[in-house]
Image (cartoon, rainbow, N blue to C red; front, side):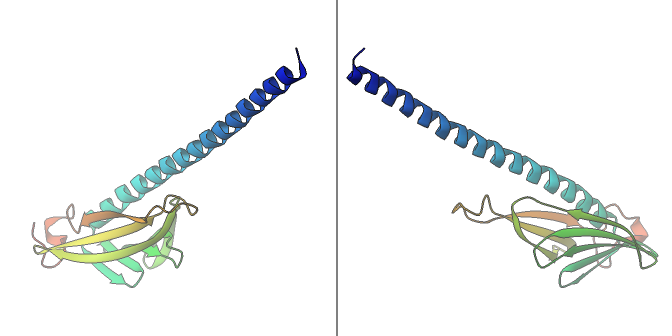
Length: 165
């Protein structure tokens, strides 16, 4: 082998190693993004099932800024609280004493909002979570909305005031 052939061979090996490192870095980034998307999906799924069940069985709803208070029965209340960072926490109150606290950590969320709506004479509670894929990307922020009908599974005499069956 001549010195020129050796230099060409080493250059080709260096290029292939460089491409291999780039592909490995891309694969690691894709794996991280995929894991975060899966965790976000799981957290939103758990939150949405719990939120809908609580709103469906509630007979009264009250929104005070960042706290949604649901009362499924006498002496019992469930509050959904959104803090300044947009994290959502579910708090169960028995006789106005905290008996359970369940924080929901939603990966890549950048904020959350609670709303009450009246649609065709029915009361709905909405929880909107803003999602951004990654901080270093320019993807737009997407809003995921969880909407639930108040008093859907409450006994007939305990449905919210003005609610249609």
